[in-house]
Length: 265
Length: 280
Image (cartoon, rainbow over all chains, first blue to last red; front, side, top):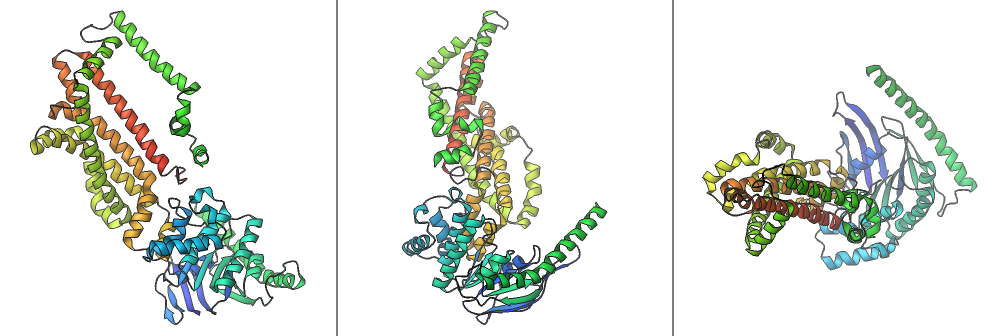
C-alpha cells in the first residue's frame, strides 16, 4: 500500500520558489492500477519522480507498506517516456541491468531476461542493440527491464506518449495482461483521457499548475473495456468535463507566462 | 544490420572506410578519383619544379630520388628501426595519456568540486606547447625514450581529459536516473554507464591526443633522441640528404594517416556506430 500524505513540492532553483505540487493526499491499494491525469506542466511527472525517489519532496511524506521512502528502493521500478535504454547494451543486457546492479548471478540473470523477453514478445531481438528497434519495441524492453527486478510498485511516466495510436493500443493491452499476471501496483502518468480510463481502476485528475488533486474518478467497468460502449463513453465525458476546465486554465497560465516573458524580453 | 547503421553516418570521410569501403577502393568513385588526381598532380608539379631547376638540386630531390632513398632506408633497416622507435614512444605516450586522462576526465565531469579545484590549473598548463617541455624533460629524464614519452604525454593528455569531461557532462541525466532507480553501485555505474555513455567523446579525445602526440614526436626526437623518425630526418641534415628527410616525412604522414583514419574508424565502427550513437 502506498500512502501519500500532505505532499508538496516547490522548485527554488531559479529565483523565487515556484510551487509545483500542493498538498497531495492519496492512498493506493496493493495491486491497484492508478492513472495520474492532468494538463501538461501540472506536476504529474514530478509526483511520479518523487514517489520513485528521484526527487525529494519539499514537505509531506510517502510510505510504501508502512516504510517511509527516502530515495529509490528495490520495491519500485520506473518506465520512462523516452525509454531510457542504454544504447551500448544489447536488449538482453538492458533487461538484465537491474539484476546486475543487485549482483544476481549470470545464469539467473539470463533465465529472467529470457523469460521476460518472451513475455514482451522480443525473444528474437535479445542480441540486438536498441537503435535497431521501433519505439514500441523499445518501450517493451523498458517494461521488461522494470519487471526483471520484480518490483511491487511499477511507476510509468507517460510510457506510450511518443508512440503511434496502433502501437499504443497494443501496448496498453499488453500492459494490462502483464499487470494481471504479475499483480503489480501501477502508477501511470498520462495526459490522455482515453488511455487513463481504459487502463485504470481509478483516475486521479490533477489541476493545472500548481498541481493539486482535483478529483479521483473510479472506473468500475470490468476489463477488457469496450471504449465504444455506452458506459465508457459516459466515463469519458465525465472525466473530460473535470479535466476540460484545467486544460483551459493551463492554457491561460501559459499565455500569461508568455506575456510576462514578452514584457521582460 | 551493418548497412543500416552505416547509412546513418553520411560522412564522406567515413564512407571511405567500412565494409563497403573495401569494395570502393577497387572501384574508385568520383570523389576518390579527384583526391588521387590531386595527389598525382602534386607529384607531377614537384617533378616539374625539379626538372626546371627552380630549386638548388642539392636541397631539392626529385620524387624518384626519394623513392630510391626509401629503397635504401628499407634495405639497410634504418626505416624500420626508427619507425619502430617512434611508434613505440607514441603508443606508450598516448596510452599513458589515456590512463591518466580518462579517469581524470571522468572525475572532472562527474564532480563540480573537482572542476572548481583543478580546471584553473589545467587551463593554465594546457596552452604550453608540447615542444616547450622538451628541455625540461631532458633535464629530468635524459635523452631518449623517457623524455620523448613525457613530451607526448604532456601534449596529449589535455585533449583526452577535456573530451572525457565533456562526454560525462553531456551524458543524459536519464541514464543516471535509471542507475539510481535500479540501485546501481558506483562502480557499476562508472563501468556500465559513465564510460560507454561518454565513449563518443572519449574516442574523439583519443583521436586528438594521438594526432597531437604524433605531431610533437618529431620535434621531440630531433632534440632529445638518437633514434626515431624525427632523429632520422634531423640526422639527414648533417649528411645533406634531403631525399632521406622527405622519406622520413612521408613515413610520418602515412603512419599518421593510417592510424588516425583507419584505427580510430575501426574502433568507432565496433562501438558507437554499432550502438547508433554517432548522431551525438
